[in-house]
Length: 302
Image (cartoon, rainbow, N blue to C red; front, side):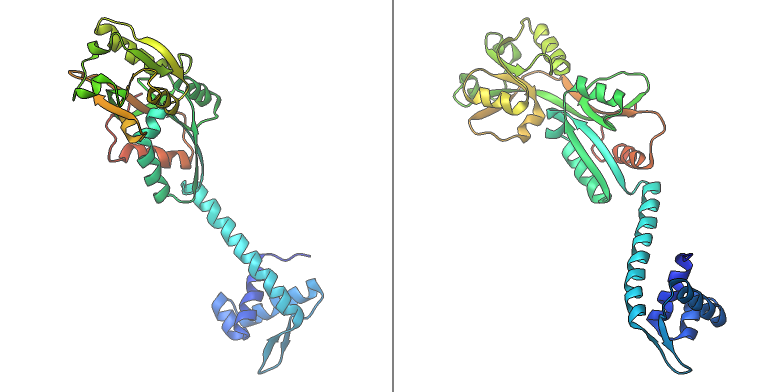
């Protein structure tokens, strides 16, 4: 059987108009050409699709059933064409995006929200992981983008800074230092610290330890957890205090108090990173979104 979309469109036009003249005009072909096409379809299928006379055209039962299938076929092929066009233009597709605790507590949430509102047909799969693991996954092609603790200088990749966080002190609510509106870093020299695990929080710890060394001490770490929620839970148990980024204020946990560090202008950056090789259309959509994002604070770096 040799039937194509042209044949199906001709049949559907006649079936909907029930008039060969109007159907031919709708298709912008001659009426004799349309009549021959319908005859060809009937011969190929081996059934009569229309009852026709000089004044009357009607579908047979077989024609009615055939119309249902043809309508579905046209809908499916038009959907496939539209999907292909959207894929080519980057309006549909899939992105896998890595993120840290700091990123998801800060600008990443509004970045993804606004992107998904603008491109609802693009599937976004966020994956939580640590900075070093994201870098490995980017190298392996597992991630399309990473949102991690910077700065990062890596050949073959582009980065853009999406947020800068100041440092804050996280305390349990009965801690004596909560009486201060701001806390000097030196006041924490003898405090027990609760931090992220050394293996996973390496990049953040580099910032924090450098800051503490400038103040003349090393943090006395008594407890560690793999994520921010675990850190805050241990602090709420009064096991210690912590120095985190100000984005943690977007987490709410009963029993905790947050105070800024006094006389400290140091910040921790969160950067978006991706391979600088030629981007697919859907990846380019996200890159353009990042560059135009209202709160984007860093210049594009190579």
